[in-house]
Length: 294
Image 1 (cartoon, rainbow, N blue to C red):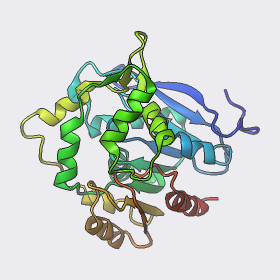
Image 2 (image 1 turned 90 degrees about the vertical axis):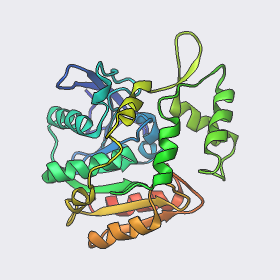
Image 3 (image 1 turned 30 degrees about the vertical axis):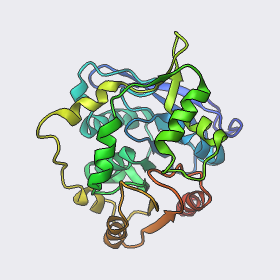
Image 4 (image 1 turned 90 degrees about the horizontal axis):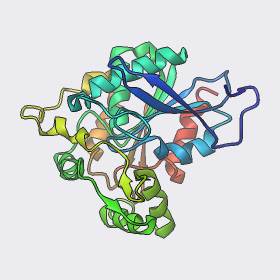
């Protein structure tokens, strides 16, 4: 085990695993940090993985413990035998098992996109487990245009012969989301989205079957998430929104902070869905939230 009295260099982590109730071996990264502060639970988006938080962890680890799980079907976590378990309520059960194994007290949840939905659901089901939350470009309502865009690409495997090819593909797909990015930025993003397999192909790093629940008739209607957001009332909360986001509208973001007295709304300029939280404005917002627990 890592000696938390003498944390390793910033950005270093320990790979650990836990088991779901249906027998899947799931992976998380554990970045060591101080024991006198709440751990930070970092929850990634729909098609993403633990690598999305590498920049955040490189800056915070040592001062803060970060636990970064990979949901079933992503990264080093096992793929589900039943694709219909790729739904938020099952992910929530998986997180319950992880938190029980960790044996920690209340956590600060940083959730991006789907991860933010899980943060709200966790607050609704087990409010005492959350010390505070940052909801990154997600809210109780998703714009129809953004939802349509997600449906258009999720579950479509892509592969590339080199990392530069992958970076170019990512730039073509996300150029409007991150208009200020250069080649080096696209390479970083490609290496977070893709993996190199044993055949030398560079593939998207998730189970394509996560798209199957989207295709079931009747699953189009999402539950009312506003009560789940309300469960965060009284907790330190930050809402981060990219100013070009097609997922979280400015109007919904304003309603969110109105319903959560004391919550902070931060808009990241020239950025779509979703901010990486490495942008100066977003990083400063993270620091202000964490300062309430330091």
